Every structure is written in structure tokens, then in C-alpha cells.
Image 1 (cartoon, rainbow, N blue to C red):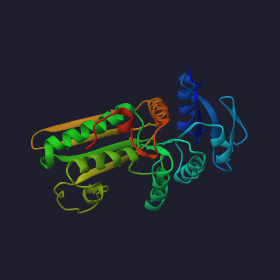
Image 2: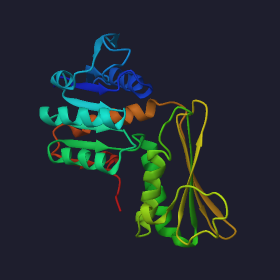
Image 3: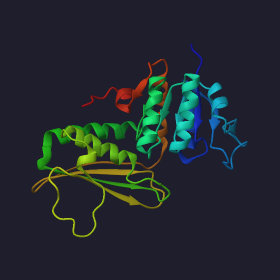
Image 4: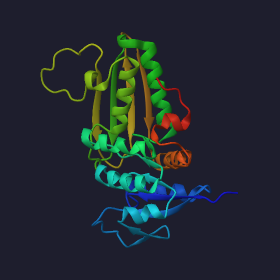
Length: 264
């Protein structure tokens, strides 16, 4: 029987980092190898899950076989650079990258296998699959609108998941979200552009995340929804992705790859 894979958790003391640590501890195929936080974090040097929290990416990678990262773009890029130097697979749910940051992110995929997912929940990824099928079958006769709700501390809007769902619908229609997306409406905006995909953002409380997709036709409507009540399923999905990455060739992968879902 092989030894459990050691996991480095980036953003180990954050909301998601806490749940990732719990998910790793609950999975007999993996163990915690190292915990990483950013320089200046008040928790540096403290102990969590039996390990000391550090801020040296190279040292953290040296004690790991794979990385799980829910943090912010700057921390993710630093973690990716260290993981690439160490040859470690990397699973990250970080969103909010600028185009330049995303390009830097993707360059590392030529060195190591990376799963980048706006959402690691298995059920959310099934939602994305259903949204693609619905968009293909219903066509542009049904207007597509997405409403997302997250906790008041979330700093980026719309959510990465909402943007991914919008891009999924756009791709199914033969376009992209940059052309079709409508992310805000205010004042005299005129009639709804044909084929547009609206995304509306709500923020409040401690909600881990809700996404509702409306396909609105003439006299009828199809609704697809996912509501999170904990962050545990995000964490469990990230552990599944990290395990799947072990032994993979360098490249940029998605949760659809991990789950074997059809991709359009």
C-alpha cells in the first residue's frame, strides 16, 4: 500500500483553508504536509492541524507532494512559481486574476499539471454541464440570466463561478462572455440585446454561495440552481482534484477533466 500523498495548503488559515485541512484529515489517501500563509499574516508561526504555519513557499513545497490553494492572486502566483520549481501538481480555486496575472498563471501549466476551477464542488460542476446542455437545446429564444449571492466579505464580483457559468452558456451558443455578457444595468439601458447573458451580483451575511440560472422564454422559464450551506463540498472536491493530478502530465485541467464530464 502506497504512502498517503502530502498536501501543502496555501491560505491555510482562511475560511477555505480551514475546511481544506479538515477534508485532508478526513481522507486516508492524503495527509497534511505543510501550511502556507502570506508574509505578515498574524497567524504565522502558530500551529494548526499539528503543523506550524509558514510563509516560505519553497520550504512548504519541499514538504509536499501536491498543493491545494484557495487564496488571492498574488499568493497563488507565488505558490505556483515555487510548485513549478519543485515539480508539484497544483489545484487552485483562486479567482479574480487580471489578464496579465492569468497569462503568468497559465505559463506554469507547461511545467506542472494544474487544476484551475472557479468551483470545486462536484454538484456545481454538474450544474455547469446541465447549463451547457440547456443552452444548446433551448437556443437564444430563451434569454439567459444568472444571479449569484455570496457573503459580505467576498471582494470580487461577479463570482468566478458565475463568470464560468456565463462563459459556459456563451460557448454553447458559439460566442464568448466578453461579447455577450451584461454585468450591470442602470438607468435607461434600452431593450435587452439579443443573445446577451446577464449576471447579477448579491452580497450579504455569511452565505458560502448560491447560483441561479434562468433561461427565460415566452410564457415559460427553466431554472437551474445550486445553493451551498457549508464550504465542505468545495474542500472535498479540491482534495479529489489534487489526488487526480498526481502523476499527470503538465497542462491546465478543469474539474470537468477530473470528473470525466463531457466538454463542449
